[in-house]
Amino acid sequence: MARIRKEYKMTEKNVEYIEEVKEKNNLKYSSEALDLIIREHRQNSDITTEAMIKIIAKEVADQIKGDMKEIKNVSNDTDRNTQILIEMINGFFVISDYRRLATTEDIIAPALTRASELVDKRKEAKIIKGLYKKY
Image 1 (cartoon, rainbow, N blue to C red):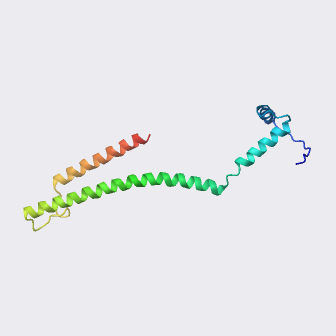
Image 2 (image 1 turned 180 degrees about the vertical axis):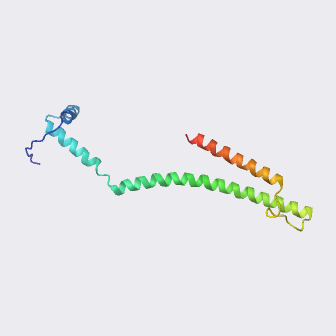
Image 3 (image 1 turned 30 degrees about the vertical axis):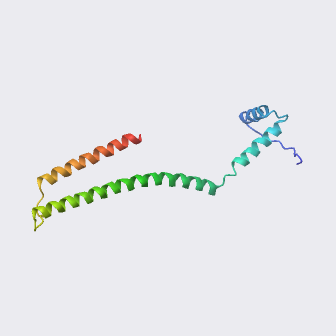
């Protein structure tokens, strides 16, 4: 390709960089170094916005996938524990021959209040522990 003579004003720092590239790549002329810099810049700029979006989307999807798996596991554990409790309470009611149910709208047992406080405390400790684990 034919060369065209042009004059440009540059900072001292840029001129030094061109010379550095020239020496590093054993080039004869500074213009060859400038050609190399421009060629590499074009090559690196070929990553389009669409490609960048795909990369970011994949990273986000991978992160969300891990978080969703953790949520699914916790949900499965909770569901299992709830089903066990329902079976145990049902068995207790059948054995005790209860005909009527006292709901929390009627009366709240002190044991339920204590159990709620204990569970809240455990959940709070687990959240704090999880925060420390992340950082």
